[in-house]
Figure 1 (cartoon, helix red, strand yellow):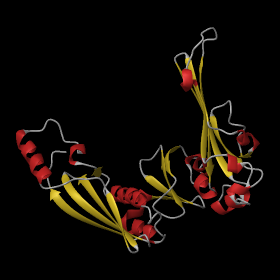
Figure 2 (figure 1 turned 180 degrees about the vertical axis):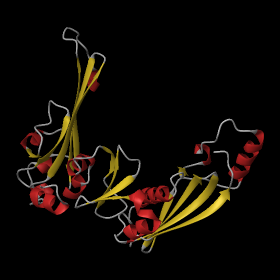
Figure 3 (figure 1 turned 120 degrees about the vertical axis):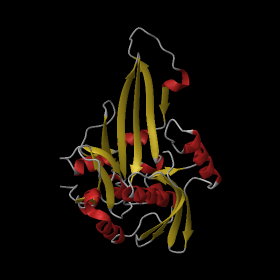
Figure 4 (figure 1 turned 45 degrees about the vertical axis):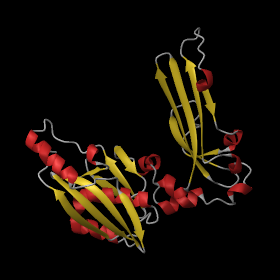
Length: 293
């Protein structure tokens, strides 16, 4: 029941009750820490792994954390768990993994301090929120506020999962309905150009599944073998363009993203303008056509 909605989850988790520096436990725990060991599976084989055999950045205060949402202690088994500080109620996502490679066993236990919203939209939590589906991938930060992007193994399309666990398949929305969904929520990360570039690329892929974003002309994948005539065509396109990595510029209340993409045998300079309201304007300048891709 605590995962029926973000509000229910937040009520169960609570908010930090004091500043980080005032908590004797959390002030000693870094945002991320891990413990890694390497050992031999052969009992009578003495292996010297040197400095790489043991790494530990986990402070002793981690042992004071309390298991919070399901799961036993994560040390000693492969799994994931959510712990909470008993003093200030901050949350920690922990994982434990063991891998056997030849005669060696690699064990890693890690802890990450997380906010309520972030862990609620994480792949670990989404699997609890949608228990009847086989999840292939999760993007915790959607281009829409209060949504995660989820893909299931039995389908190739993407779904929007809102904070009340309502699923909407993007492929079934259609262009007009998708735009309504986009415009109905504030666009996230407008002050983060890297984030805006990522979301603009995703929106471009939704509108055009065959799109391929290129960082340079040399990264474009050409059809093999390339004929002499096609080589001349490629050289001509190279001289007419300066394909470069995506860039974003903040202009008042919107961000302008410049992308070089290859789509439907065309080399395109795509300019995506993203407004704070979620409105997205895409303009394409076709640089070359009928390319051998």
